[in-house]
Length: 448
Image (cartoon, rainbow, N blue to C red):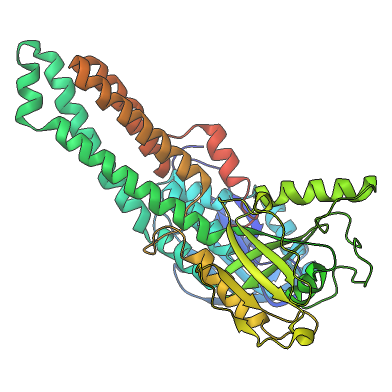
């Protein structure tokens, strides 16, 4: 697909299920003619027309609004028409079928956004931000995705690409005039400016990694001795009985996962088997899985019975994860609920999973502990693809500058800079393979 020379696509652009309003979106050269046949009327640009939408025998399918957005001043850059009718599942599919009968075809997932990208209305970062904004589960995730959609991330990448391109030109110019190669590079401070670019890439990489952390699910694992109250805490945090709770130690044999929100973050909570020595083969496997889960965790909640403290050894509390000690069963011990001061400064919260005391304080500590990771100035949403591309650029430029220090070979530097700029340009899609585009847009919902 290139430019505006495409077929016409159609899709339902509203969420599945019945609702008060539903939208059919058309994009492509035949959008206007299809919509005008559907409504048996002329449509003026950017005007909401109230019309009846008719079937092939003139019967009324539905009535509502038809709005025509002529290209290139539309979301996709093509002629676009939106048909707004009632949101019933049957009526929307009937309208869509009628549009297809009139010459459109069913859009692929993300094809409207893909056409917007191909026609230069948005870049690849902005296209991904659309999907991230739709999928946002927290206010902060929506805020960061909106910033990316507005171009906050793209403008930084574009400026960096421009600087690299300029420095590449100077480096390659020195190759064309070998008797002046060192002079050209020194006169324009190319090496120093490239080091500045690498520092910018490193800062951007840190920002992107922090942004990604703030918009993804965190893995939180509940670890502790048998009967410390891990399953009770899981139920209290989930606000439903998702785990079996008994007075028998070792009730939990396998891992159990439940997603919850804690303020501006989403946690995947994992309940695990109680940590102890056992001859039971099934319980041994449960303990093994508990250890594997804790090693992969972003956060470990170390649950301790405040009446019979049985702390587990440090091997279960990985240094790579945030560790919070949770003193449970204070309804029996009489300890006051809330944050507990400790001599070593470790995070500790006293709770009763049984009656809910201290649960809100625990959630606040969890949220603050996770959000404080990395930079606090995240300004846009990010994906693993962005982290990988920036890491590739940073590593390549670091190696290239080190080699240049030893060999002063402008030819090698110029070749390496092509790789660096290619990695940077892949972020916005200036350099992107069909496989990458297909992978990105296939994850979008149909109609977007």
